[in-house]
Image (cartoon, rainbow, N blue to C red; front, side, top):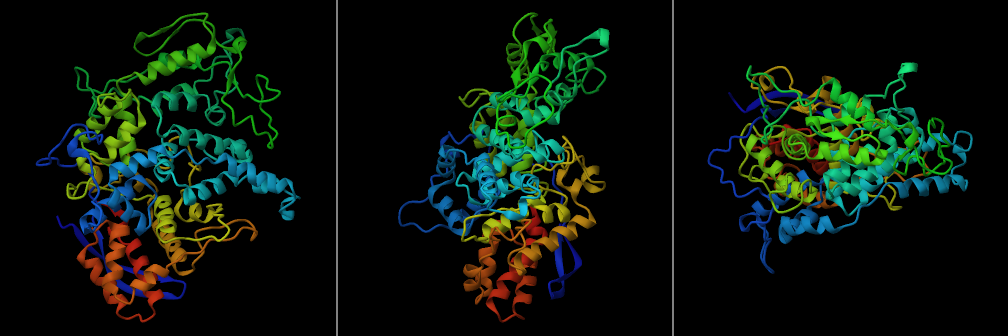
Length: 589
């Protein structure tokens, strides 16, 4: 089966049109064949063989080192400029990552506070008649501002991955209308991204945004005489989606089977009912709090910023029997029950492989091999000398695993880059610049064209499910490609057009309701300088966009087009556009 297929793609964009034959790689992401690949330890960066020492003073960075640094940046960040990739290559990936671990989180809530203060001072007169108009997009403004400017670039990328595992969405009107709900929830992910999974799971469980989204805020104890029983929504999802999954797993992520060869469920309806009792009595905190609160002052900074609190008289007082017949005794305080339930979930043997596989999928490859999953799950379990659930240990294991590095990939390895990552990478790599330092963006154009925007999932199941497999070769070979669930003929054209607008129209990534915020513009001056020598331009783009994996066929097509263009800026624009819509960039393999 050939790895290259030729398709005719017609490009018509902003007056720039043409017709070329572009090679479209056949995506065959799958289980990585590890035969012949030396595996050292668990890949947490501790062993001598795991450490990337960088280069010595005065030494020149090799092309391989640059490409490896670019590959690492592509997996661990939203994309970095060439000079930042050089910095990683010179410093060494391990040392650079440890520096990133030490940077405090750049939070979203301060953006919300600043914008609301400015609005209340009358800075934007057009919002006086409808003050909620700005508030409904503040969480989006905060996301783009910090994603574009924060120094903790790895933390920002990991938090985005976590937001697709622990899902809340601005499609819930209350969350969309209160600017502190989703900014505070995302801050929770940022603060825990390098912490411990147990703390993360507990904080998510007590998050008022999650409490509203999955309806365990104001969840009352049972009253059979009134036919009232605890809401089971969060109890189900905290097991199915946020911790242990539907079926028992081996440490390598494979299913455990019973004597009949059938998967073994991790929980049943009784487990859901018992878990639901745990999360009774919780409600929103803040000044004037009371149980049953359902109406909110959208200027209130506390309701959705503080963890939910327990009202003991509404908490189920009886004994609860959780997973594996773990008994939570009757009569203890509600928060102690919550702590006990979090411990049960956190210590379940499924959590390591279940969570780690999905984190690998979001950051590195759609179909990690069982061996890769096992190595990362063992890091989660504390086998690298760190505590169980240590996120830094997990991330080291993911990023420094032999399967994640250049030169170890097979034709079955890879992932389709999701639209959000493609657009943010474009803006970051090609220096979208704002003199004011403001990068506010509603993201509505991206959401309309590509059917995706952070914190805007259509359901708690994210934009795509981790086991989604498009019909055809991928499904037939028992592999998955989650991002293809939102890849349709419409979204393919939409994201292609969005990329073109962003490059040729200079300022089309960012959009706000009114022109009172500066609209950042793309800065291609560095690439225009290189464009006088098309080979040099393509080599640089190959490094920052495709990690040295740009195919010869694609290079020849781009060179052929550039030979017909004299203006160096147009050359840079065309080269970037053609490579960014090519499968060499879109499919990271």
